[in-house]
Image 1 (cartoon, one colour):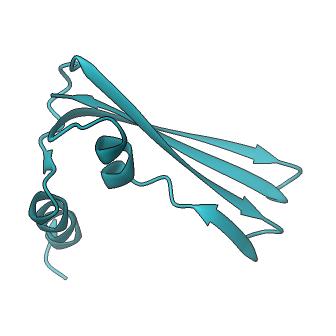
Image 2 (image 1 turned 180 degrees about the horizontal axis):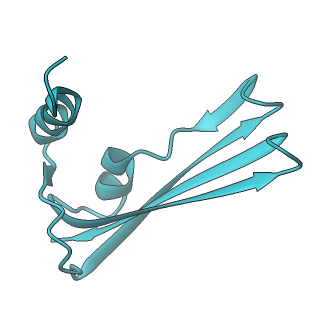
Length: 88
């Protein structure tokens, strides 16, 4: 794959679903979050923790910052991924 093609494919997908991803680092007025949990080293998963879900959660259509936090418990027995976004 050419350099950046996966990123461009995701940006196209997000834009087509009503979210403009332009993470320029300026903290926006609206904030949203999305979480995903994996149990038993990935055998069971709940939620997805995606940027798109976090943006839709708070009505953000232009994402300006993205922060992903991961908590690993007992060597991967439980993994919690939280995606935080801000924007307008």
